[in-house]
Image 1 (tube, rainbow, N blue to C red):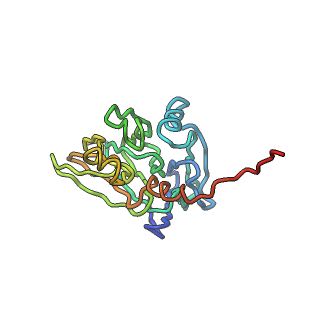
Image 2: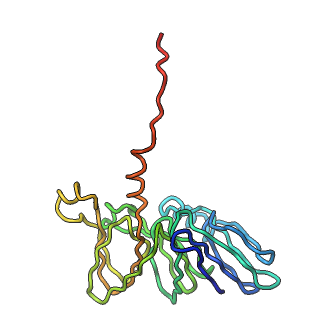
Length: 230
């Protein structure tokens, strides 16, 4: 499998070339185009219960699409739902936790499921459940805005606004907390943050969907209803 990301980091397009017989599993709605040697099969990957967990708790599609190259190598293009970047990670018997909406595609050998994050995620913007990707193979994740990776050494801590988290390695410990005191949490505009502790890598996005919605929603005109009283 070969890949290239173009038009990033603002409007990234993921180009994938599959060898004959090779497969790639993608989130529903991610496909932009594919060549004649690529076929698509849609199914509830991992069975009904796992697909239901991904859909209800992980924020992903119930059905996923599996693309297969037949009769030679085949070309496939994918894109995330939000304007932003796409990055590739090669997992080697590893686990990465991905925020809701950032999973784009992965090797069919990878296991994609949800995991209960416990009380430490209760106040996080992503809720109680995290998307868990485990195994070996290629993984593609997306962001809103550009992606920045941070490598933490053993015991090193790093604080990230919850709206700017894309993914993180399972080796990194984390906990959601207030940015500082009550006044800072309420008035600073930062809200809640996630404190990571290494070792492990975390991936951040330069824009926050929550911050964008907070800016946009007050600007949308509200509908007015005519008074029909005589």
